Image (tube, rainbow, N blue to C red):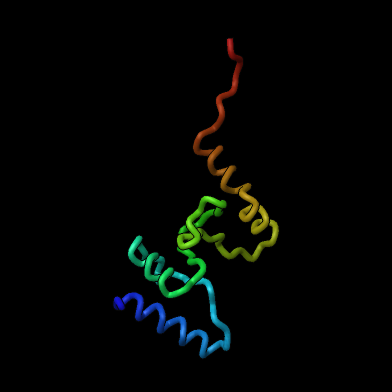
Length: 103
C-alpha cells in the first residue's frame, strides 16, 4: 500500500466516523493531483473526485477530475454560471464573431 492510498483511505474512514456516512466523492487537497493520485483515489473505492478547476463537466469529463462551479450567493448569477451562459459569454468576448458583409 502506498502512502497516498493509506492517507486517502484513513481520511475516508475518519470522515465516515465523524459524519456517520460513507462518501463516494473525493476532493483533492489544495487541488493537487496527477494521474498517480487519481489511481489511488480509484483504488480507495471512491466513485468520483472534484478538482479546483472552475468550469462545467460533460459526459466526456473524467469522473476523477471533475470541475466545479464557484459558490455564488446571487441566484441569477448562479443560474447563468451553471447553465454555461457565462462560459459562452467569455468565449465570445475573447474571440468575437466577425461582422460585416461578405462579398
